[in-house]
Every structure is written in C-alpha cells, then in structure tokens.
Amino acid sequence: MRVLKRIQDTVGFTRKEAVSILTLSTVFLVGTGIRWLQPKENPEADSTQQFDYTRQDSLYAEAARKHAQLATASVDSAKPAEALSHKTPRTAVVNINTAGKTQLMSLPGVGETYAERIIEYRNANGRFNSVEELLKVKGIGTKKLEKIRPLARVQ
Image (tube, rainbow, N blue to C red; front, side, top):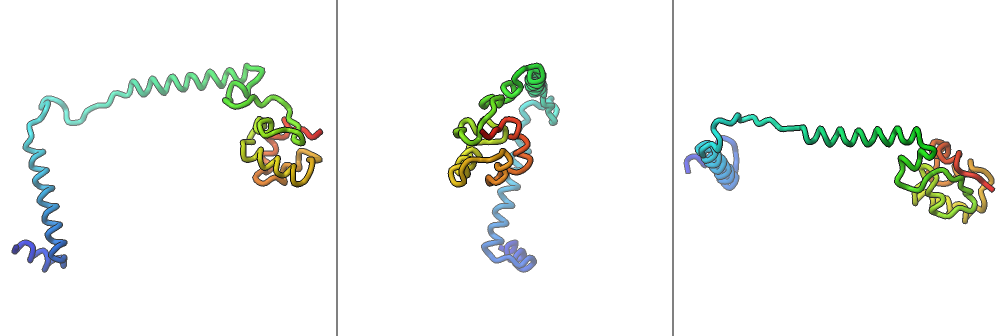
C-alpha cells in the first residue's frame, strides 16, 4: 500500500489509476521473466534468422517476363488493344449518335458511367454535331477527348 501512496503523491494519479499501472507493470515483468526463463528451442541457432527470398524473386521474375511478352506482342500485333486489354477490343469506329452503352464503352477511357452520361446528354440535347461536343458531357475533358477522337465519329 505504501507503493500506491508514494505513486499517488509523486505523480498525482488517482488510486484506481495507480492500481492499474501497478497491475500492468507486474504482468509485464512476470511475462518477461517467464520468457527469459524458458529453455531455448534450438540454442545453436542464430537469433537473427535469414529469410529466403528465392520464391518471391522467382514469382516477380515470372510476372516481369509475362509483362514483357505482352508488351512485345502489342507492338508486333495488328490489334494491340486486344493484347493489352481484357475488355472489348478498341479498334472499331463508333458513331456516338447511334451507339449503345456497350459500343460507347469500347472507346478508350469510357466506362459504364461515361457511356451513360453520353447517352443522357444525347437524349437531352439531341444528336451530336461534332466529336468535340463530347466536351459538354460531364467529366469528359480535352485529354479524354483526345483518346476518344480517333475512334469516335458523328454521322
């Protein structure tokens, strides 16, 4: 009890706080003593184990090799978009005045949301007069338009 009184007077803890600190300290010291007194499983083993990175390195090398194959295939291929994309091939020209959602999604940089926005804009304002009118669709800026322009047509 004198220890608790001394802690209370010195640091200014309440009695419950002092009991909690004393309990946690005791548990920590007992746990440290138990761990220190336990016999070593392998006393000859070095305390710093070395991790073997060969498996992770081989997985990384395999992934890099596959990526390099895809990159060279896209340069050599007549349809580079098919080699790199898991989506619809981006080689067909799309008429933005008549295209459906899936056709619009085949344009570069146009996902489901942008396709829906293009259709909503077309329904609200009528046919597009030029591909540049896509700039009026929310979220389509000049960079995205430059990606879309080669494959988008107005007829």
